[in-house]
Image 1 (cartoon, rainbow, N blue to C red):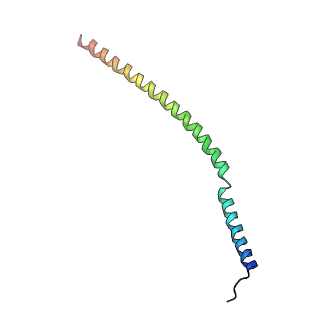
Image 2: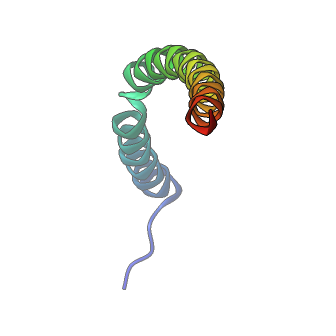
Image 3: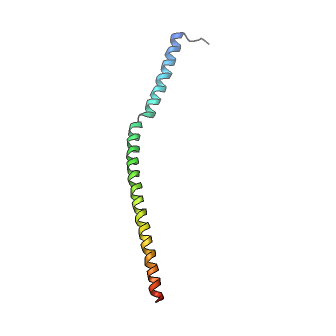
Length: 79
């Protein structure tokens, strides 16, 4: 088997590196679009989190009102 010259080794290495670089470029080409989508999702989830807090507060308030009404009804029924 014949060994490669230094120039042939450089050409093979250059070809391999070019293939690897191409594969890396292919793998990361969608990163900007993915980041944009993630940023949008983060904003949406932040809004949803705020909405959930508002709904939780409203439910808690409503629960207190219902409990108070139940106490008043029980008192009226006892008369």
